[in-house]
Each structure stands twice: as structure tokens, then as C-alpha cells.
Image (tube, rainbow, N blue to C red):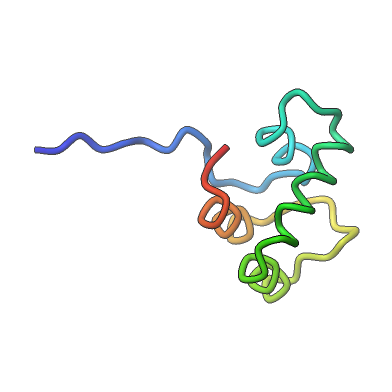
Length: 77
């Protein structure tokens, strides 16, 4: 039997700043959010996939589906 690796981060509804802080823990929430947004824009497939899931610039949260996409493309924080 092979050991399974458990995800370290739970897939759930995240505030955008909360998720960004997981990726950039030493940044301010606003700076972390801006950096995550730049990462997302630099991966066209992720950016388009999130647009299809109705991510809006001014929305405050990422849905579970959107978080799954981010984890898929960026790996878990």
C-alpha cells in the first residue's frame, strides 16, 4: 500500500486576501492580493478558466471551484 499525501490547504471558499496571504505570508494583505493577481494574469489558461467561473476584479471571494483551479495551476501554497 502506497502512502497518500494529504493536501495541506483545505479547498473551501476563501476571501481573496486570505488566499493571497497563504501564497505570500510576509506581504501585506493588499500587496499579497496584487501579487497573486499578477501570477494569475501571467498564466493565460488559469486566467481564462477563472473568467469562465465568473471571477470579477472587485469580488471579495474565490469559490471552491475557483480555488481548485488556482491550486491546480499554481499548486497549493
